[in-house]
Amino acid sequence: MKTSVRLLGSAVLALLVATPGIAGETLDRVMSEGKLVMSSDPAYPPQSFLNDANEMDGFDIDVGKEVAKRLGVELEIVTPSWDIITAGRWNGRWDVSIGSMTPTAQRAQVLGFPAIYYYVPAAFAVHNDSAVSSIAELSGKTIGVCGGCTYDAYLQKNLVIDAEGVPAFDYQVTAGEIRTYDTDTSAYDDLRIGDGKRLDAVMSAMPTILEAQKNNYPMKIVGDPAFYEPLAVATDKGDEAFDAKIAEVVQAMHDDGTLTALSEKWFGVDYTSVK
Image (tube, rainbow, N blue to C red; front, side, top):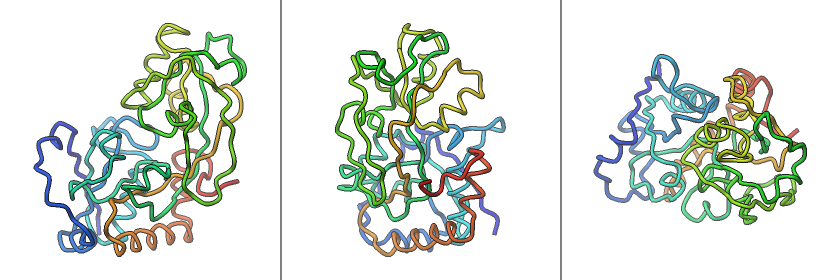
């Protein structure tokens, strides 16, 4: 069936009255209503963004569409802030987050992570006019990151990635100041103003930085990736049947090459396994 996508902005979402807590009934609700509600970020290209037609687009969006299609339901997209998504206790306002979330130990206290669907390198970038040429030179600098995300945790030196097969990493930078933003794009906007004007560097997912460069952001990547992070589908705790169904669907997408094809479409490389 054709998957329809409807976008509810954050302002509209804030007006919704939270439904009573749902524990163990998410799968039943999704299937009976014929609708999967997915949270996403409207400013995180190429994973998720509003395209020229004012429609949600990107790698995560395509993954969400395919998951909904394989469940036999429609897809609806909402855009709450990242900190609200990662706080858990969604109370049925949305069913799933397919938003490039890293399964950390702290998040696992309130969220389920039934399926890892790709892996990405985390990288530092500076303004093109910066004289910085190594990661070591970033210590003491002002670095911008998305608030509450894994890059923020890395700079705070308390990042714990709760997933199997994660390559070991070291904390290579001691930031002079960590400046947090609602989205990575907002950090890029401050960096593009000029070297050292508001930021000395940003830390983000490498494909997101590369996409920003394509869109004429004056940024350059410094050094090798700081770490590699598995990115997972996230659910609210409480429905093992729903988690099992999502895991089954995503595994099938790995097995038949669908995720590889989507990764190559949006990133130009296959990020669906650790190389």
